[in-house]
Image (cartoon, rainbow, N blue to C red):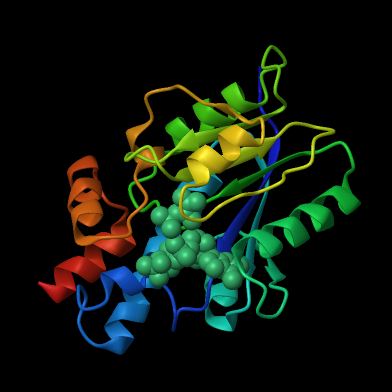
Length: 214
Ligand SMILES: Nc1nc2c(ncn2[C@@H]2O[C@H](COP(=O)(O)OP(=O)(O)OP(=O)(O)O)[C@@H](O)[C@H]2O)c(=O)[nH]1
Ligand SMILES: C=C(OP(=O)(O)O)C(=O)O
């Protein structure tokens, strides 16, 4: 069965992004370039996955929006100063206004090792009609966070990203996606995460930025 999911990717302003990775790439400009490279590698992989019908970046940052469009994503302006989950709720409402029957998902923007085939498989599992909950999520590699949340047609996305989001999504009735998808689970918040992602194989833009930083 082919999944057809409209996927939101939230991205905060580059000046605030990836604060736990500050210093990895060098000065402020190099840090912003690394943060953008991570987003673009994630988007390129998502664009290459089967079953991603619309790929929509939600961001208030014009640099992110312009670069995202160059790799084939659509963009939607963030609501001013409301944060991650309100941005996703807003995005989901816009997607459902365009197609009330769509399956809607949210993908983290910091998956620089993402392999399209792993996202394809996870989306297919998420919209499998045999899945009773109607909402499904993928744990990050540490097991406490969430890298992907999908609401099947007719279900509200109800995103609960943030610290402890795995428990929050579970408590809200979403089911876990159980496949072995290391690249989909590998969000990069710390230097250790980046090393792990490098072991899986980084996207070209992120690899280039890190190589430039030595
Ligand atoms: N559109 C939008 N996206 C957000 C917002 N806040 C966070 N995000 C995104 O949500 C995801 C998780 O965000 P965080 O963990 O808070 O931030 P981060 O930049 O990944 O890392 P840190 O700065 O180290 O916390 C990332 O993809 C962010 O870009 C927001 O207010 N609006
Ligand atoms: C927002 C989340 O992750 P992180 O802060 O690790 O990017 C999350 O896992 O819900």
